[in-house]
Length: 86
Image (cartoon, rainbow, N blue to C red; front, side, top):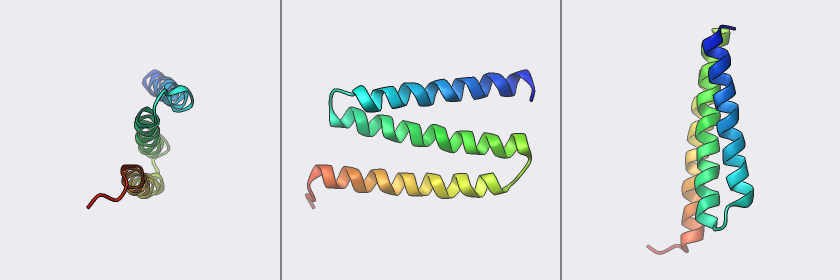
């Protein structure tokens, strides 16, 4: 791994740790939802980075599926919290 890849990995890990900290400590539920969404986006970016580092397109497929599922999950969770107002 090059120095740039190591720095990117450290920054991604720091972003996940900060997001998980907000997820646990967050004073309100919207804070927790935003941090969970942020962690899922950072995880998707990390999977795309793994695809570049390991030169494997399989990680891109996994990142795309994970991103779509996390988006749908967050929309469903927001809908439940909002209370089905049509």
